[in-house]
Image (cartoon, rainbow, N blue to C red; front, top):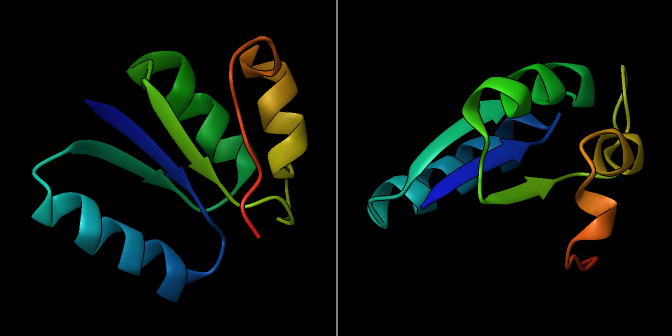
Length: 77
């Protein structure tokens, strides 16, 4: 399963990477929505884990420009 992590907080991003690595999942990471979108276009992940409040491009913008707004998604607080 291909997973994209988009998170500007280094500690949070690193924590998610550790979990995904332990689970043996194929993943890529980005530190903002702009970088995440560039990776998304090439990598074509099945799951995107994204922060909402980020510089460059926030998670909601990422959601809409990737077309994921048409798919099933949920917000976790």
